[in-house]
Image 1 (cartoon, rainbow, N blue to C red):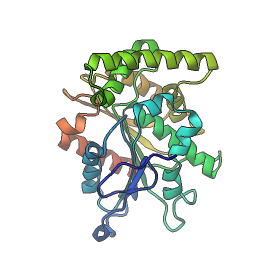
Image 2 (tube, rainbow, N blue to C red):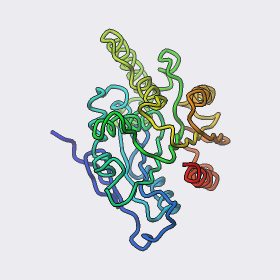
Image 3 (cartoon, rainbow, N blue to C red):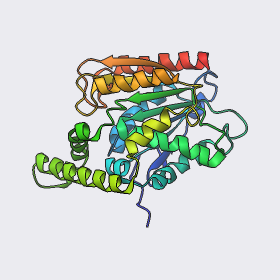
Image 4 (tube, helix red, strand yellow):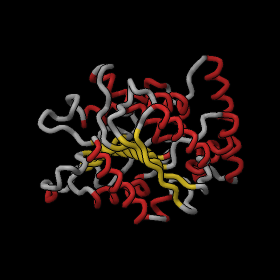
Length: 291
């Protein structure tokens, strides 16, 4: 039986995990180079009251754009079967792309925003879901992909401690015992899940997402990327992220990077709001001019 959508003020639930807010009616004559739709893939276990700070920021930048938000749990990102991940984001594709370019009246100008590895995994799921709907020769059209605190290292053994901490941060409030016990339980779960996937020959979700996003037959080269990160991120190592960016460069994607000072995981906007939004706005304008 489907889970009941969580309350998300100002948004309409399209499913238990996908939410929609239309652009402001008075802003319908906004500049034609603004995005028509912004799709935010939230971080693992991100709550609406926290994610709404980002939707409000985007609404200030682009008041005419409709905003879709995908909320997901860290456990769903790490353990949900591939087909279930793709199906979970299908409401996004069916809403934004009833035809391959949009609603048939105007081509969509899309800004994608992926937050943490969970957001990155479901962003990749949306790219694949688009091809499932419209054909393997089509790729989800977007002008800019903002990668906020993602991706990190794909080496399980070296990263399981970070991942278990991330899962504990999102779930520790549900348990009466100390945080370290919750993290220990997730650590054991992740190792057990890794062993099970290894025995089945399954591709880990993070590895799959990285492959999809850097595959030029699945994710269009006709777009730009912006990577937002910091040295103080306790979940995503900055060197790991820069290694991923080096791979993106080798493949041929256009990108920019922005390192913030002192901000924690998906905390760059909270600590540096003006720098954060100005960088996104500038990169959108550059991407729109290029593509």
